[in-house]
Image 1 (tube, rainbow, N blue to C red):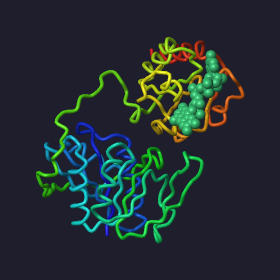
Image 2: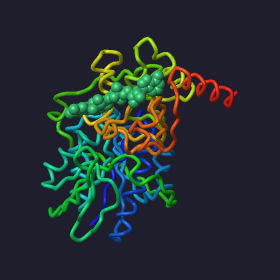
Image 3: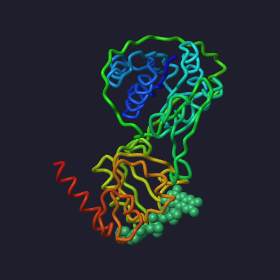
Length: 322
Ligand SMILES: Cc1cc2nc3c(=O)[nH]c(=O)nc-3n(C[C@H](O)[C@H](O)[C@H](O)COP(=O)(O)OP(=O)(O)OC[C@H]3O[C@@H](n4cnc5c(N)ncnc54)[C@H](O)[C@@H]3O)c2cc1C
């Protein structure tokens, strides 16, 4: 019996979400009195691999194959399943990001494992195995029981936090048997968008809604985002109107994000919007209407006109930086 965590890397580097995943999975392994095995796929240098020991990765299986640097879900799910079978793993945990969402269901099918996506916290019970997740756009929680011998979970960002738990990280190389057929569809090259923070990865997000009144007013949103090194987002009507691209739309029908800091400028706080941002650690709302529902979910509220407040915030942050 063992617990496996898949540590995704981005160009050979791990992110906070990987450290959170390792911290979370280590805790489950401890509760089950078993070993945690972390799996890394693609080229990552030893120092970066060893850094996972800080969060409890006592054993790390590295598939250091340059051909696997770019994520191919068919290949990755095959590799993780192969390692899981070899190690007799009964719990496999991934982050609930784009790669986790693509790989986890394939592992679940391969291993005939029950799967729960976007788990919110540590299992409520280990025997029977019950986990908690949000349902109905965050309006309720469901407790889901997995009865299959092997269980696959993806964990929601910021559901547990990063917990230091220094152990010696033993690194093992592994060469899986991957058939060429699995590379039928292969990403040959990835081009990163320059000068733009990817919304799903952003620690800080500056988001704006119809209260901005016109797409011509977005300069103040972008300036604040720039000084903070933040991603930009918007409410649905804003993207429906074509003021901003649909890739920025957050909410029930858009992206679900969980940054550490979320600015909601001129956003009313409709339930469908809040469904996509409620896992943010800190929400700052700027709205002219003191009765706006967004203040009900905000940690800090500024009552005022976005066109006055946003430039002042930008200036204050610029000054404090310099
Ligand atoms: C099935 C369904 C799915 C949906 N999915 C989503 C979704 O995924 N995401 C989403 O966002 N919405 C979604 N919606 C729409 C949602 O119900 C709201 O209509 C929408 O979120 C409102 O967007 P808004 O807050 O930008 O605009 P509004 O509701 O028009 O609010 C604008 C806010 O700006 C404030 N304001 C105005 N002027 C200023 C100013 N000068 N300075 C400061 N504040 C100002 C106002 O007081 C107001 O609170 C969905 C709706 C349905 C029915």
